[in-house]
Structures are given as C-alpha cells and as structure tokens.
Length: 301
Ligand code: 13P
Ligand code: SF4
Image (spheres, rainbow, N blue to C red):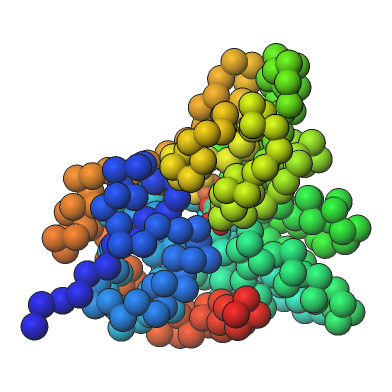
C-alpha cells in the first residue's frame, strides 16, 4: 500500500509553497493538524522546531524537513544548558516556553504556548497564584509583562525578523499617510512597536483582524510581521490597502530567511522522500517534550 504523504506549510512560506500544501496555517493549527492527520509521511514546509513538534505529536509518522538549515533565531540564540541550570536553581517557578524552541528546550518546560494562546495560559497560571518564568522570546515576554503587569523573569532571545521592526521608521511611515492608518503586530516585535499597535496577536489573529476590518475603506493598514502572511491577507481582503511595516525608513521588506529556504525544489524533493528526517529525538526526549505541548493543546480545546 502506498504511503499517505501530507504536506504542511506555514503562512510565512512563499505563495507557491502554500499552494503545494494540504494544509496552511500558523504554528498551533499545524501542530494540531500534524497530530490528527493520520499521515505516514509529513513534509513540513516550515522551520525545524515545527517539524520536531509534528514528530513529537505524531511519533509514528516519518517527518521530513525540506531544508536542513531552516532553523529559527529563537532556537539558535538559546543556550539550553544555561536554561537547565536556571530552572534547577528556580524550581519554584512554572516554566512557560514559546513553541519556537527546540525539543530539548520543550522538555525543560511545564507549559508550551503559541502566540495564539500565550495570554490566556499565563493569565490562568497567575490566577492560580503561580510564579511564572517565560522563555525564550524576550520581546513577547516584555510585552506580556507590560500589558498585564506581570513580573516574569525573561530569557534573552529574539526573533531576528520581528526584532527589526522599528518605531522611528513606523512614525515616518505613519506621518506620510494623510488619512486613516492602523498598525497590527506580532508579539515577537519590540515593545515600542507593540505599544503603538491597534492590535497585537498571532499570525492567525492578525489574519482574522484583517478579514473583519470594517472601518475606513481607504485606510492604510501596516502589518508588523513576516511578509509571507501578506499573501493570505491580500487573498482574504483584496479591497484593503495592506502594507508591511517598515524596518527602516522607506523599506517595506522583512522576510524570514529560514522559512524561505523551503523552495519549490526542496519541497518536491521532500515529497519524494529526500530531505532532513526528524529521526534524532530519543523516545525519552519526545515523551518529556510532549507533556507540556499536550497540556497546551488540552487548554486550547
Ligand atoms: P505563529 O505562532 O503565529 O504561527 O508564529 C510562528 C513564528 O515563527 C512567528 O515568527
Ligand atoms: Fe523564527 Fe522569526 Fe523566522 Fe518565526 S520569523 S521562524 S520566529 S526567525
């Protein structure tokens, strides 16, 4: 019997890659799909931590990453050994980790969150009187601390793509628009940018905000996130004037180099069985990492 191959693509991949996929989504949607799709082979056109999450949730499946170099700066900037030491010294904290983390990192976590459920999960932990530490995204953690008055100790990694959005460049772009203007932003962006935003949320959250937009029809909507999602926003609302937020004056270009390693050739090769197999995690590592992910999935049901 032939194997059932399912191709997943994150919203940040190029339009032609999204068109090759059985399912396009944000990291939470893709994790859920990977768990329940019943595939023999999952080709994950995203980045490595996403393919690892798919393998952890569906260990029977063969998971293939089209490009071996497609990592994420939140992973590469995190020293997991130092994190382990911190955790051992602060056993009284509940450790909440963003899904943009390695399998080894997840195994050191009590909860995994995505940008879609992070607010609710951390609020519920604070409501239970817990002390919470957040890793690895410093910008997201700083935003949560600012927005809700938390005092979470933070880690120091950033998304190298979102961290480039710049308040001064935004001020300039805003000043150049005479009429109505809005800013929506992903919480991996720096705090001064998030403080200016009309909406802060996950990739899907921003897409839903655009779909529901019913204010001035000629407004300019700046989007502070990776450029791949502009394709989906344009498909959903071709009537709107949507622009990527600038990273410096006059430049509307900010793209994740790791997501863009998923070229047509690389995805085709992965669908033919070539590519990087996620076969290096031990059963113990997968079990330890699965627990905090399952906790999140149960919470988000
Ligand atoms: P989402 O969780 O919104 O899909 O974001 C993943 C990501 O890598 C953002 O940079
Ligand atoms: Fe990582 Fe940033 Fe790329 Fe998302 S956009 S995969 S957080 S480097």
